[in-house]
Length: 304
Image (tube, rainbow, N blue to C red; front, side, top):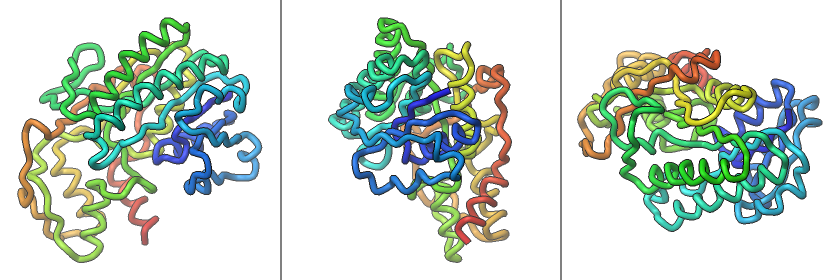
């Protein structure tokens, strides 16, 4: 299978490129022109022969087919403003909806039969209780989540008009080696490694962590499975109170160290409650291989 992957130098994009190549697929990695992250796409000699790099900006997707040629599946992971203050920037988030449409059109021009986007649990907003793909009504509270939801809804209509199957993985909290700085996992690990005390919220909301290689494998399976279509929660089977995850990080990195829960206040109306139903992706034969403790060990060993 030949796949096109936008956002190929991102945390998830790089892992997906590697996962696809390891499983014998051809990969067209779409990256920004003159991207400084291009060096991340260095794989084994045997895999390099199946990797093509297309330096094409999101505003140039209309001509992507000229570089790519024919392909089978199109993964659109690129998204501007996925972290920090940019998540609340209307102009930045609004442009992503147009890029989603451009990516679907590019996929059709490449002859792809399937388009796999990159949704987010942020589309749901604050949900207390189990979130289900076919039952839970989204109520996003930030521009990022609202734009993701709009991209899915408008993309679904466009995909139907153009005759291409659309898969929308709603990705939950992914961690692992190479994750972006500023995440909770990185903050707790780095603070403990310095011998300092992490200052945290009460961490009494439910959470779900998924290791990066498991996330990439789930995305690969969604692209490979001919029957896959619509929304799928890409998350682990391990859902519990966030406090428990933080304590597990402490037990791996610096056993016995203090954790200052409640040092930071939270707004209940803007505090995510991650409790996904994962039965639908489980029906495709997917289950996570890396337990949370194992993932933290991998991160610790990589940084030591």
